[in-house]
Amino acid sequence: GKCVPGLVAMLESADPEGREEAAGALKFFSIVSFNMKVQIAEAGAFGPLVKLLGEGTQKARENAAGCLWRLVSMMNESNIEVNISTKKASDLVVLLHTASAEGKEAAAGVLRLVAYNDANKLSIMRARAVQTLGE
Image 1 (cartoon, helix red, strand yellow):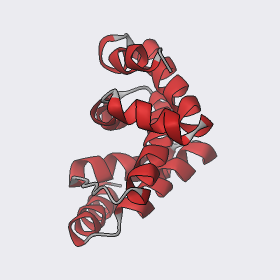
Image 2: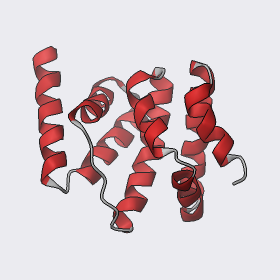
Image 3: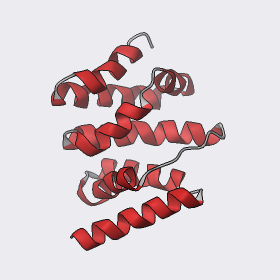
């Protein structure tokens, strides 16, 4: 758990491969235990992971989605509200079309978890519309 803050820092400071590896390690840790998910969230990973969805390598985006899926799930269980912008929803929608099976599952998982409130539903609907028009 001591390495979590360093990995979170790498999400923003490392080169693209370093970011990909940091996101992969955090995704792995997020699977390990509830306690690890709390540590990842407390280390401030949420923002950098969301940012990575739109600007990382393909694998980094998928790793970020995998970790976010588990963090958002934990936040839902703890009744912490998660809001998603149309821009971030569209980053996830892009993954639904381009990712590996695992990446698609993670992107769909995040979208499903955040779709409980009307503002998020609207963001996701707009993102889907933008994607469809852009194809």
